[in-house]
Length: 382
Image 1: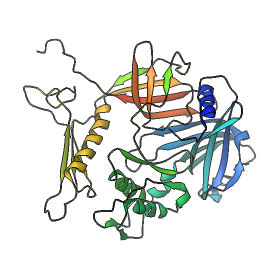
Image 2: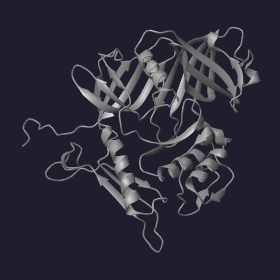
Image 3: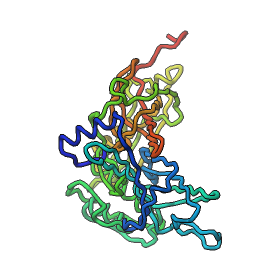
Image 4: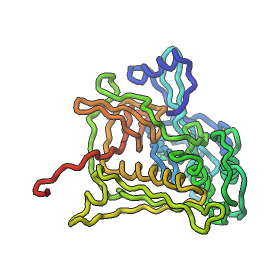
């Protein structure tokens, strides 16, 4: 979850406010691409929603959609004449969600560039994406990089204009095993996430609500509870089943260790206890494989490649049962956080896959994926 830096007493008060009736406000600011505030436009906001998701390669982790009542063009993002073209290409949006207790508790929930503006009469719809968007353009200037992996990540982000105060990386002395090639059509963000993944298994690179790029490991403990008893849960979970994206084996091909002519390989398979095991979904004693293949030249040991394969397999095995529910807003929630969900039917620690938080009407929809732990015997099958 987004670290708010609160002392213990204030952290407790903040947690209690999440499940209480309190005064709320949403602050929306227009920034330039260097985070300088141009204007505050909260008074024009009619509706809005922040969306978060566990990003795939080449995707952003946060988006925001906002609707403003702007008959006088106070936003200065469009004009009356279509010949003026787009006026928002050097603008960002910042959204801060605040709750009032003994003081205002401010939580930045979004910072990123505007990518689309639509006007319909007096109403203006604005869409913005997380700052990953800046680094999803083409590198254009080819080159190579060597040295520390964290330094390489910073350099790749710097190619899109990012500066050090908006980059937070772990302390690491790991070096690139070989020079990293940067082609003209390379996307710096895709390269940066690849290097980041090679630091340790399960590490994610993303931009948070403040607009800071962070490298974090997936949480291993639940940090929040949503239940009927604490007043946070607003709806019963809705469950849907799908195996469209399921994989039951992952093969990761790494780089060639020094002195070796063949690359290292790591393989992870769904265990026999999993309902998605190749033999459990097969027939006539023949397995059905649904494979994912990945190449990562930064992995130079079998152990590292296997750890990466296991990490990927865990995510794809989780894509079996999708569950969504509505709760009171948790503004500091991040995709991939672990939370505890308690209902009258079950109690489960789940990893967040996605969320959508209203900025005006209240309420937050959270989606997660859960793993089937045993294969039910079907009627007529021995």
